[in-house]
Length: 318
Image (cartoon, rainbow, N blue to C red; front, side, top):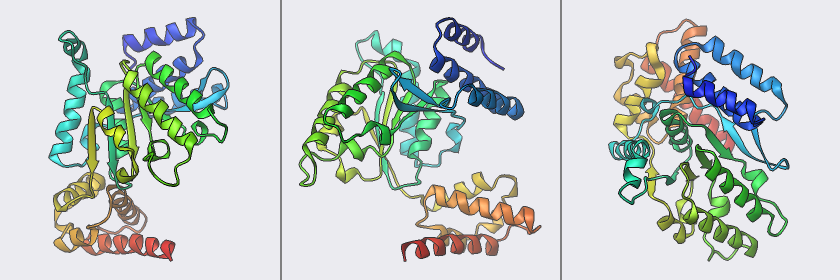
């Protein structure tokens, strides 16, 4: 059920003719209803919002640029399978954000500028979604294909618009595939315009004093400019799951279909080297077979699904 604050925010957005804010709050209410188990109501709310305009999920910037996409975040902290160190650091980000006014009263600021790096499928984007859900604030992803243009100076102008929104709207802002603008300025193939864009980003990031959380995610830390690291409050490194995390992923993703005896040593060894996202897909394949073919969950079924997924990647590379 919508909270009192959400209802007031919805009314104020209507009163101020603020389309983007109205849609954001409505999507937050939908996410709250989904978490409460009211999935039909949540879906109906989202369908209504989608009918308002063809660009309902895109936040318009100064009526000309579509740079931010609003994502309905429904993921909780328990869905993230990571090392204890990473989990502790995420909890620290959440705690500091919730106590940010107390920290400011002592002249210090909470961690709000986070660099997340690791191979694809290890939970970087999921982390941004979880932070938004746990803090009950919107999640916006930067539309990198609309941010970066071939016209000199235009990308920096758009970047300024994004940081103006970051200052005006309390939310989690995700710069995914961040190496597109954060590449090392010393690289031989780096053009002068992108160096200027990175310089602009560094200045905007350093001057940001908003209540938002900025997350930059990359698959390739080595490509990033070294000047970036000291501008971020925290750097989270995500690895492929180890043996214990593989076991935890099967338990979490198989849900009611999970049986411990099916997750044998052979299964865990077969799954080693797969990312969190890939193991999730294996679990989905197993569940579909169980439902459609009336099978039981066995180690043989899991191994079969793992082999099929590995073979698909080999074929793709060939």
